[in-house]
Image (cartoon, rainbow, N blue to C red; front, side, top):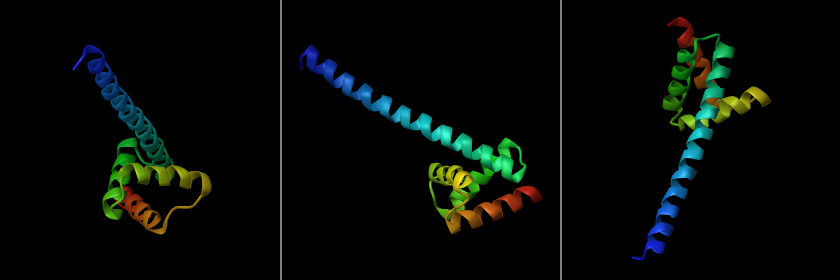
Length: 98
């Protein structure tokens, strides 16, 4: 393999890594926003908001990032899918009790 081919291959690998990192940053931002929504709605501490999101994700078998997207969008449009809404209400009740 020539030096130019090696460089092009390395550039391709780095571009893929940059794409993954960009996606991770966006996903992390959405999760942080969702934690803020849950904290505000449930009057919880941030660590409880994180636990609520994880619980919803596990109980609905939905990726955490997707749950976060629903919660953030739901804060704007005041609608959540029924399964996510029920899981959120249940998780908030448990967080209040605990």
